[in-house]
Length: 426
Image 1 (cartoon, rainbow, N blue to C red):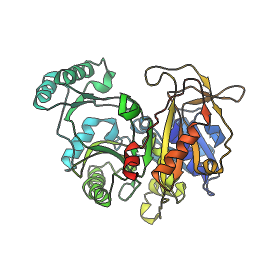
Image 2: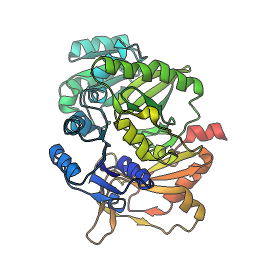
Image 3: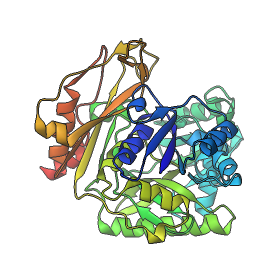
Image 4: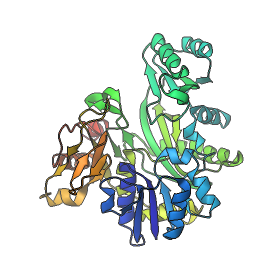
């Protein structure tokens, strides 16, 4: 089997790493990939969807996997399917679950999926009126795609009104914010749950928890994610059952009934309040860095999971996961998330501990290859050090031991990834 992976981040690298272990996978391609993914397969510099489809046909590629949300919302799946090509991901109409927060919230309301009280509007007066009815904090969201940065948690009514005004004026997020969602703040603990779907059937992956804030103790600005771990002990069988019955099944049925059958990754942002899962948002692709922890927990071949979902045949799949834990620590560049940093050469020490060699790895993201073959940190989130273990404590120790082997000027990372789970385990 030949496989093409669309994207360039740690998420796509991790999918490639999992597929590389499959005996059935002969050749991997990345479009565009990053400076390290050429060690797993071949990077191709093609962005036009039609030309990508041509490349797939010419190189007899059996499956295309789409990593980021942008190409999904822009319709790459529709184009590939129209040409009879096998591709993993939702169509543009189904991808509205992430492409439009208004579409998503209204969909949840139509189908009785539990979510926070909200109003969607393009009117400042309407936004102000609803803000005045809420207790603080208050959540203000831009409707469109904002690269994971379109959500403001306002600590006061004035801050919420200011955020709404900045969005609706186009100053904050351009056209993506000219319609907004204002919703109540939910007080609980947050989870990331992923279901691989084929339009009718689904497989739920181990629940993960990520760490969005830049600094230890969940302080500092929000980022794309500074680390994650899976599975989380904060989820029990009852919560999984409620998510399947109250969230995933009605969502797949609702999307099918409305003419938008959902195939791909349903990323469910969950807030658990008094033992009840309430849906914060949907995304239509793997989270990053959650994907980096989930892929190594997959015991069955990754190609089976992705291909059978793309073919609408998950019912015949036998998907299994290792009874282990994974912790991933993001190493970011000096000035992340405030501004771009100067490129910095990455030096990785030789691994001398057999334990670390066998139970940890790096998923590369914001890296480029120099003319001399050296690897440079050129993105905000540069790489993820992933540790695997029989306990969260063991996985945590291995991930951070690997972090100590990686060096580049200005590197920064949190030192408390998985702290909530570690407290429960101790």
